[in-house]
Image (cartoon, rainbow over all chains, first blue to last red; front, side, top):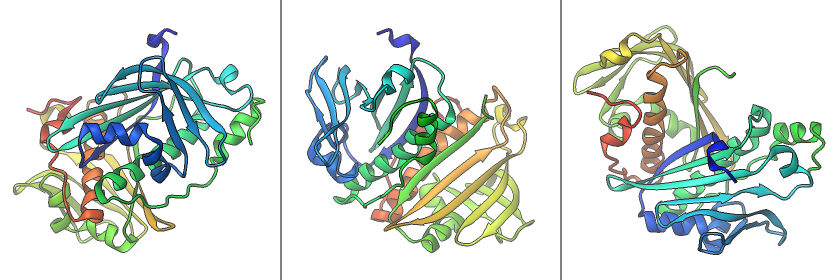
Length: 170
Length: 156
């Protein structure tokens, strides 16, 4: 896989009163992610080439991929492929990179969702709606000890666009 | 090709009324907006100004005011020469109750292709809005270095 072909199509930056180590842990541990990511569990083998899974509350593997860049607690890149039939074949691989940097007494977290081809705003709308909810929850969890329950509606615009491309969605 | 604009969404554990107050009160803004104070009577057509240490850095006019749901003003930068030549932009705040939290969407548009202003704004809003969220949820600020704002645009 040639990383240079991947362009960031969605970027979200958030500042958190925490340490880079704690932000890293919150992004990569199931115990944390279940609290801010609608019950989804991030299961990652902490090494380059390790497996990366996001498990839905029903136990199924919603996202599966591998660890592509591993530099704790600064940078993590994983393949972020949603397990819907034909999705990867038609949209290509999705890469998600987290960059974690100290910024004064806070931590700056930059999430970039990268793709190796142009995708429509309709396709990208799912992630663009999802990331702010997930990362707002993560920030609250780290700063207050509790993540609010942010229940986003199913991404109707993205699902319709995927369906139009012949991708089966649940 | 989509128009050059910046959109940021954040979810805050607060009420729409408190968020509206935080966006329109200079007491609040100078805490989370790196010392900047908003000045307006928040009536459509009235002047809007952002001032830092007594100097007006940005000015505009109230375009929409529907408390506590929607606020919009035009925004013209006055301070840095590199940005002064760019057109008048627009900021729209949309506040929506969302279960136990409030969803705030900030849209900033009206930029020119390849201008510097969009880059400056794209660095500024995430820091400002992260501070706003922390202030409303925890009563505390983040102490982000001002230098963090200047990434992508080196203010002199």
